[in-house]
Length: 222
Image (cartoon, rainbow, N blue to C red; front, top):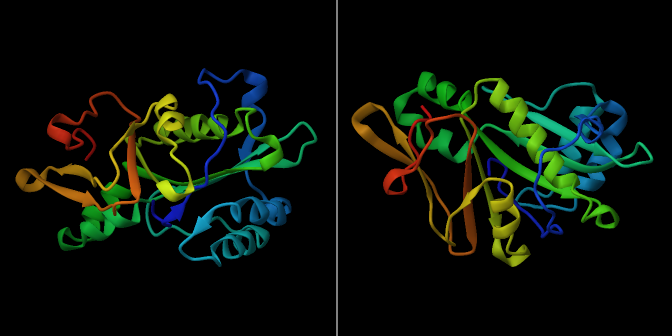
């Protein structure tokens, strides 16, 4: 994950296409949501503990979350009372972008417009099991797919719960603990790695036809 969050376990929910009424519950976060968004983001254990406050301050100021290249989303799912009950943040894949530094800015921008990292999903503890996290993931995937993105990646850490089954229901391929994600680079037919330690599990989901992983290397993205 670009922000290196460590997701806590969320109740498992069955998959399925959200209804129109359900989709209306999902929306981009706005300035009036800043305090609530911060509360929800603080349910995630981030490498940078100040990140929820920083993102909330940016939202409160009416600015979009910063991104040097590519698209970034901060979505909320409203509960029945109209108050955000879940939040999702997604943006450029920082680790992979770092791995492309030697190829230059153009290659990094190209990747940032083809690959999105699912940085974090948090659901109010009292609202888990209602499918809000799944709705957010599907809505985000739809938005990025329509913007021309081809791959969604993500990470979770085992000390905070094994989410393999949950994300597999969301269409992700989840790798074994410690295995890095490998992405094919057209130049020289090489690959760039998204590293993982022994307590991390990486995952990926195709957003476009033709994205496959022959030999464990994701192809058809760049």
